[in-house]
View 1 (cartoon, one colour):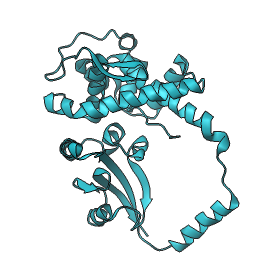
View 2 (spheres, helix red, strand yellow):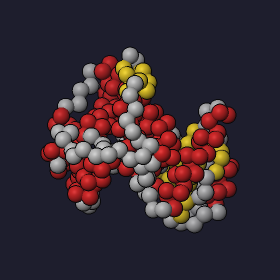
View 3 (cartoon, helix red, strand yellow):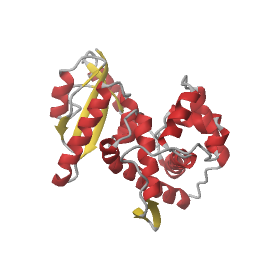
Length: 283
């Protein structure tokens, strides 16, 4: 995945703008109900331990970054995607080590500054939100470091092997000509995977919760980055311009029935549960 998932701008601001917080010296807080720190081991990945504390912190980060309330129900729903993120990051760090990829402190600070420059959000608001949520600076730093390390690893491993020939260029031109005049839809997606029947109920519960958060004003792209299990999660759920027939039939039918700047209700299709967002249409 060449394009890595961007950490939410509002969260990144805290590390650059609040030195005390960046040193993990935030004021003591009372953990919200249902989010008491858990001790013990949550997972082991290549002999690396993901602790209950790591999972608790990532659940908090995930909920705050998506605008979800911090309570028993949302914490329980966030545990699976939060644990998946931590496991994925351990695997990414392992692959980065194989390629001798190192992400320095300046790399992390530079990425934070870049995010801040492209954001119009208020620093103080999110600093206070994170302090109240009990999120420590290393939790943010780890996520950003993993993203940078994975991006560099993929580039180092595959950049020299990729080439585009004249035949591929011509095929793309021919495809554009053949599709001229057909309707296209600019689509985003959130996908909650169902790998086996036992996951059906949990996946449906999560996708319903995400749909409710969207209706209450949560940003589709933020939810997609944190919860979606589709490759498009790296781009905030953006899958670009889609023509009829490119999506599974169930999703095609749903997409044809929604208006621009609206989202679909959860729909079951191949692989899991989906929410589609229609951002634009054109010929």
